[in-house]
Image (cartoon, rainbow, N blue to C red):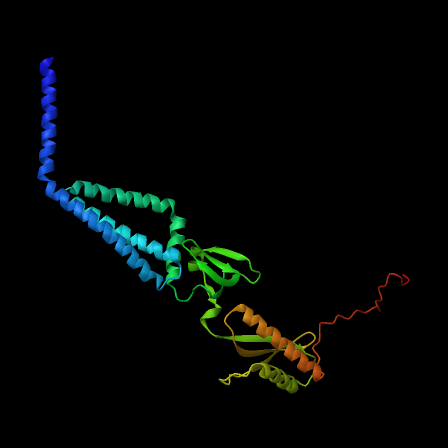
Length: 292
């Protein structure tokens, strides 16, 4: 019994001695690994601040800038971890970590496919110069001012002050119209005049009404075209350019133009007819007529 106990203590002593010996032998490598991890930690903090500062110059969203900074810092820490494991001759552990990271990344990517898609789309939107905060855009059946682009969604503020939250993925995959990219916009006004009207006079009055409102420095032409013989009127369109950057400016310009044309037509007795339905009461099939 005593021999077994003594043998057990000897085995324990041998193992502890082996561990101490291995620790002493690998002490330089351990010190190097610790130094590498410490350096990578402070380097990650520096990289995080530097990347956030650099990204904030081009990206107005703080959340996107912070995300890019954290990703850069994480990459630096992982690099330091791999270098530290390599310094300690733990190549097998390094391979195991890489394999585990690959499998974990695949599982997480499948589970969070929609979320990651919106996140990456948000990053892409943040770098796009054709859509920025403050722009007036129209997309997916909604129109409004872009007030926020975060990691998951884009927020629009509509005419009625309602907020519309649209997933970033939807913005990337569908076309959108940005009214703020240009400072000028073409306005189209449709109207009709009676068949008895002097068409040359109608054209002249319409151009005068628009020209009195918008006198362009670039002498852009006010276009006038008759389009069709309607049921009760001869229809036309008038096209002209105005300084506008959003849909509200477009509506304002069109509203002012319609009022000006109507005032001009009234002053010159130009009729703008409305549809007329004629009813005949001389029906021979009247129910009161005598039957033969």
